[in-house]
Length: 535
Image 1 (cartoon, rainbow, N blue to C red):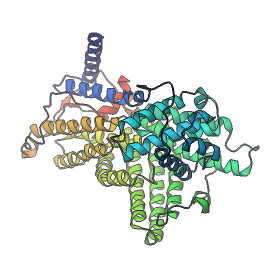
Image 2 (cartoon, rainbow, N blue to C red):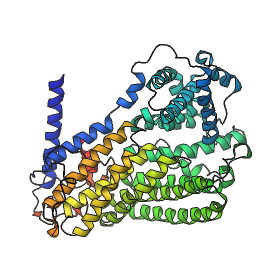
Image 3 (cartoon, one colour):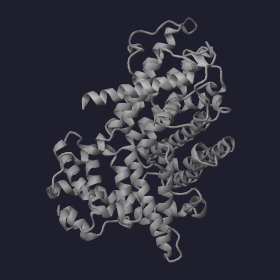
Image 4 (cartoon, rainbow, N blue to C red):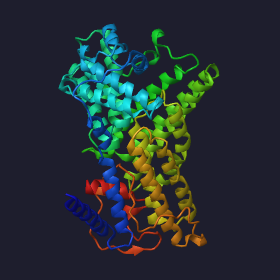
C-alpha cells in the first residue's frame, strides 16, 4: 500500500501546485514548497490518531480500581458538574456509591460512566501524566462506556450532559471534527427535548435556556472554526431569551471559592452569549447563501466589543479589590480572552472583503502579540473562562496566514510593517507549544508554524530587504525549498469568487510574484484559499 499512497500524495501536491500556477498566471520556484505546506497542514488537520487511541488496546470488560484511587476522580466529577451548571449539577447518591466502589456494571445509564471516565482521565493526565498504565485502563473503560448507541441516538438529559462533558473535558483524545460532531448531537437532542415548550415547568425551562446559550456559544464557534453549518439556526438566538444576570450568578449552594470572581464571571458569560449572535452573523456573512453585508457585520462586532469592554472593565474595577491574587488574575485573563475573541473575528471579516482587507494587518499583529499573555493565563489558570481548545489553536492561524500572505505579496512596499509582521508571527509557535500536553494537534501545529516562520524569514531576507542583512543561521535554519505547511483553517468565500486561470501581469513589489489585481490587496490568505479549493 505504501507505493499507491506515496503516488497519491505526489499527485495531490502536483495538482495543488498547478492550481496555484493558474492563480498567479505563472510558475514560481516556491510553489512546490507551498503545495507541500498545504498537503502537510491538511494531513495534520484531518489526523484522527488521538481519538483512535481510545479504541487501541481496549478490553472487553471494565478495569476496576482501588477505592482510594477512585475517590479523587469522584470528587472531581462532583466539582465539575457543580461548576459547569448544565442540566444536572449533582450525581445521584446511588450512582456515586457505585462509582466510588468501582462497580461500573451496576450503573444503569452509561452516560454517567462516560462523564466519570472522561473526568478521571483528565485528572490523571494533569496530575500524573507519566502514569500510562492508569491512563490506558481509563481510556479502555471510557471506550466501553461510550459504545452504547443510546448515548448518541436517544435524546435525554443525561446523554446531552455526557456529550458536552466529553467534548469539553476530553481534550487529550479529541479532534476538532469529533468535538463538532458531539456538540452538534447535543444541540439536536436539546431541540428534540424542547427549550421553551409550554409544557415545561418553569425550573426546567430556565435550565434548558441556560444550556441552550452554553451550547449556542460552542455551536457557532465550531461552525466558524471548521467552516461548517451551525446546528442551531441563528433565529433561535433571537427567539429564546437570554438568561438574566441574576440567573448567571452562582447560587448560594454553588458559590465559587472565596476570593474568586462571581459578578465579573456572570457579566463575562452574558457577553459571550451576546457574542454568539454576532458570530452567527459572521458565519452567514462568510458562508451563508444570502450573505450579510460585511461592513454592517463589522460594525456589529465593534459595537459588541465596545460595550463588552466597558461592562467588563467596570465589573473588574468593582470586584478586583475583594478578590484573592488568583481571583484577580482570572479577571485579567477574562479581559485578555475578550480581546482574543474580538481580534480573531475582526481578522476573519477583514480578510473576507477586498475593501477591508488592507485594514486587517494591524488587528492580525495585535492578536498574535496577545498570545503570550493569553497562553500563560490559560495554561496556568484554565478556569473559569473556558474557551474550546480548537478556538485557541485555530483562530490565531487566520492572523498568521494573513500576515504571511502580506509579507510574500507586498513585502517590499512596507518593509517596516513586514518586519513587525514577522515578529508577531513568531509568537504563534511558542503559544501552540504551551498546549502540546493537552492535544497532539497542538504539537504538530507548533512544528509546522515554527518551520513556516523560518521559511518566510529566509525568503524575506534573501531578497535584500531594504539593505537588511540576512539573519544568523539560527533564525534561517530552514531551507526555503524544503516542505513546509500552511496554518489557516478558515476559508474565505471572497477568494472562491475570484478569477483564476488568466494570464496576469506580474509586478515586483512583493517577494512572491503576484498579479496586479485587487484580489491581492495587501494580504492574501494562501491557506484559506487552499482549504476551500482543495478540500
